[in-house]
Image (cartoon, rainbow, N blue to C red; front, side, top):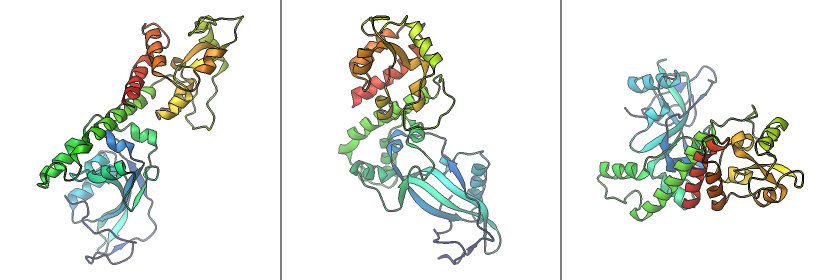
Amino acid sequence: MTRWKIPRIESVGKQSGNGVKVCMDKQPKMIKLLRKHRLPSVFCTFPWVRSGTAAFGYEDEALVLLHQQILAGKEDISKLDNLYSLMLAVDITENISDANNKRGFMGVDYYWNLSDVNYLLKGTKPSGAVSIEQAGFTEEQLALLAKEDSYLKYIRALEAHDSKPAGYYFAVELEDKIKSMERQMTAKGTLNRLFAGLRDNQRSNNFTSQAPKISESMRNEVLQYHDYTCIFDGRSRPEFTMHVHHVIPQRSIERFNLSERLFTARENLVSACSGCNIVKSDELSQADVRFYLAQFSNPTHPNHSLVKFLEQIRQLQQEA
């Protein structure tokens, strides 16, 4: 089944190189279809993706049927993956006919070639590359697709298929670097999927330039649970002012590309005095992670559900 059954075209209504004319009665509505199946984690670190216009017609019935199934939600666009490339998203329309008025499709593919990892490591990109946002993804959404599946398995299989020696498409000496990137990205993807289930005291998921505010009822709940006592040094009211402190602070939320919802989740809040709240407000150190893991180890602790996230963050810190 050939993806490029009809050559790429520069514009509709023109004669293509093989004599097939693609025409439209009116400007069609384009539908954006996003990948749902997960990807080898290294591809979830890309800030860009390739973009190319695709036109394919009625003579490849299997390909037309597959796109109809994708449009109907019966198949994922990962079905368009092949040995050489992985598909991230597709802009597609059904309102296309060829010169004989037989049905076909036209659209825009957003994809990576397997060898594009070389561009990523060099900090460059090919011509025609666009941002992942243009393909319909945010960095956080792309991270959710990361799976623990080695890129090296794919690229070495491609080299074997093309009868090339190992290292022909991707240098052997870069394998350790890729493995490290994969471990970090897999951990980030796991964190984002876990945090998606955290209980949140805000219904809005809209991004704000300032940190979301914690409700007064949530603040009282946290302070009362800790009996208005600092979790770090034992100081308490009325001698000392108590604050609601974030276990995973905003800077770490941004650094690890975590969901902003975490900022108001009950599981991420504890009681702290003014001094400790200020000292520990910006960064989450490895020592902090060890402290929290010990504090929240009891399954009855209200912050216990944060343990699995802290363990993932500890793994990221060790890889950094």
